[in-house]
Length: 174
Image (cartoon, rainbow, N blue to C red; front, side):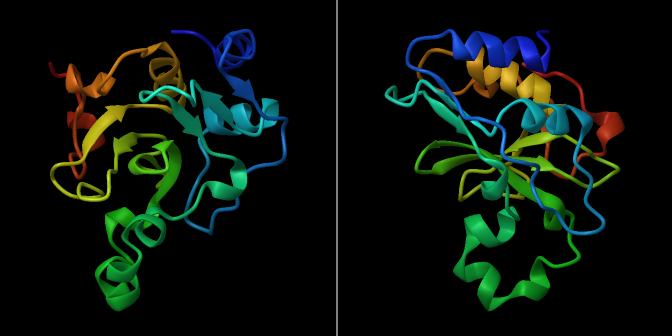
């Protein structure tokens, strides 16, 4: 697997892709932990546009766009019943990548026990038993999103398990 710096360098040299300049780290509350590979990424750049003119293109969010997923993706459902989400395992899921303007989202788990696990969090699947673990680290997610250049999603062919599965039980399936 490529390093974070290698991936960013490849992206910068790839027509149709763009690397934003560094602009700081995401701001997260106490109890959340930024994985080392995510810190390294934001130390080198402020986000990426991976083939934005293609249907299969993705955008790795800027640090200011890395926000609590329950609030960003569920909107009214969260506002109407925050007690259903506050204190739950989904409380530490943060947006990290989006395809187009959504609803295709990938989130990253910033809970220290599950630190860096990435999930499909499309609006209907966010933090449910249908939400697949698509990468065990941000670096793996970045490498796979940059390498995937076709319709669909790389995790349709293989994924690690589902949201809520204990980290020690996650293994590549498919």
